[in-house]
Length: 458
Image 1 (cartoon, rainbow, N blue to C red):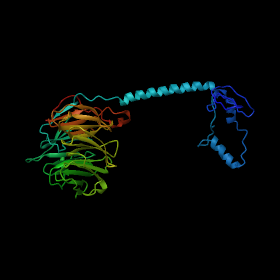
Image 2 (cartoon, rainbow, N blue to C red; image 1 turned 180 degrees about the horizontal axis):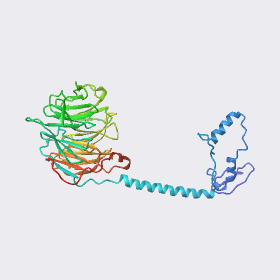
Image 3 (tube, rainbow, N blue to C red; image 1 turned 120 degrees about the horizontal axis):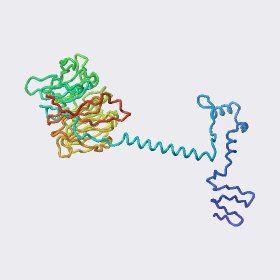
Image 4 (cartoon, rainbow, N blue to C red; image 1 turned 30 degrees about the vertical axis):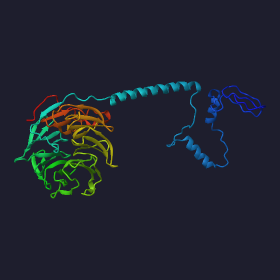
């Protein structure tokens, strides 16, 4: 109730009654601010909205303007007629449409729940290896990079002074080379993107290119004065890092192959990775630093970023396959941290301490995950593999297989299988990165590669 004083009316705003106390008083059908639609004449409203026989006079508008306005309101962009703001149906029929919309909404919600169950249900990590190969005489050295799975589906691995090729399709084994001489052996290997060439770096500073089809050495690349610890391809450019603290870019198409040499690291260069676009190079050193280089501006003093947050050598580097400016890195025993970097801003996105040596990192190309291989340390992940959810680095699970540290990781061309090389002289194959989502199914074209049999590489 609202008391206006003597001679004024009293109005009940919540009553539907019509009150008339004076000729100047307005009618109030229902609430003043919320009209009661049931009291409206919808047929009259429909007629007023759809009847175009009477045009409201507008002295300020000329005939051309009014014609353009009518066309804009009654024709779509392709010139077809349509009617704007036309009420369709009636009060009685509106309830049926509301019920239909509710049913459609329920169907959509149920479909979304089923979709979430199909694509986002937690995957179970494998309980055991899909395959084990013996790897006698493998060098148990944190600083070497002696395993690489090429796009030709051939796994290259250095065992002592010899280098072997294992064909994962027909399971054949080929000894590609064996070093003659004391204390010399392969310390780094890398397949070219087209897999026509295999680059091999050695303990005594040599760097060679081998033809994969003819199994012959086709080039000797010069420049280093100590062991070649790490290699990375970028098209026709082979980049090598060495204990002599230098990074050299070799153009394998030309005779005088070294195109640039940079010296920013103060100790051995033990990790190199080119981004997928080929415009950025990440390098990790034994002095605990990471450098980011632009391909077109590489010089000893001209690096894009320098990251100093690790407290041990940085060998493990991996560029994210679905975010071009994201890099993952792992530190050695005294650091034990996995860090995610935004190389565009030069900032650390996330970091997690594992309390164990990070020897290798591999991104999952089918899911937003990253796999780490561990070595020495006091943490529970010692000698294990661990799968992390990106970007929060939530631990999804760990795999216990090797009895010694994991020296390196590499994944199959279809991105479903990962091989780990251990200091226990075994290669273990894990079907850990699948199955892919339907939206990413284009990655998996080769199907299952490995059986459950165990076979020696000897």
